[in-house]
Length: 409
Image (cartoon, rainbow, N blue to C red; front, side, top):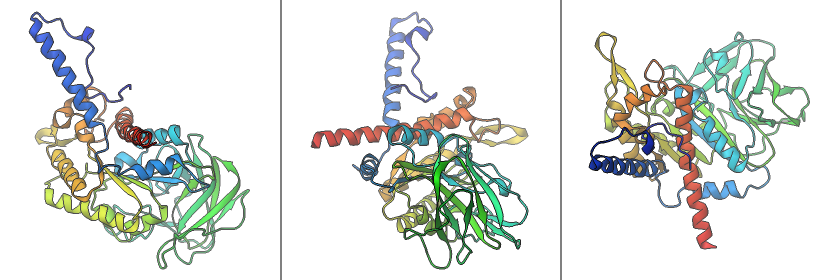
């Protein structure tokens, strides 16, 4: 299989500088073989035996409109969507996509949104809040709240930019809101078909279109609170939700009703990619582990059927004196804390910190154009490589699942 990772790639023998001593060439070959072995070992989901088997069984035997839901939760690395894209593409190739997934009003709050969806509307007329703000008291599953403060309905456009169509819009909104509707060709009858309601804080309405589209207009009633929507379709397959917030840490997602409201999304698999911001400043490994433990346990409580996989952060830099930067040693501490807690909790993890070179990979991330000039965020190619590492680890586990099924049969 062709590797997607620029770190620790084997050098072809023809590219090796000729060596005078034959012993040196032999040592170089042995070292390359060792690197390949380490890479193949690293690109994997480490989890209890058969941990993800229920996910693969569900993906392989879809029934009706009962989709497999994957939630990719994270920070700014996830928010822009480039990181999640290879994961979405993998599930699409292997099992088919059942819609674009979450669409959240990032743009109305003045921040960036995932590249595959677009929510457009006027910025005025709303009071907004976001989970990364200290004052956040939202009650929805997206970490963003948009409350209408005008006396008339307002429209927002929901669209996709990658050609993935949808024929169903599930709207997440506040309790006791007037009915949301679509402007155009839809069934004209909002439904609440599954047990997604928790009295007192968030409701979910399903609006069915009469045909599949790549764009529609949602009418937000006067005074209503809008948390976002899920764009889906009736065809079987996998829905992959992208949900990230700039500056988020594990502690961020412990606020208020967030973890309990995530149950509204009905996720079967939750991939958590956090840790970069946890590594900023002084790091207390015990505190990081406590935050990881709390988030995982709260998600387990609200989504008991979901499988959880944690990914570790790749190396980044911190500022030093006189404008200089240096590799951030705290990233390793946070990565180790995440792995230790994943093992203790019995959930899965993917060690992307090691896949991308660990402490020694920082300079190569820069030289190979994978880190942006701020030395924290990745370039588009960097995010694609990172997403491919997650996708390939999942693909490897699915291959293991198929092999185990073949042995049984």
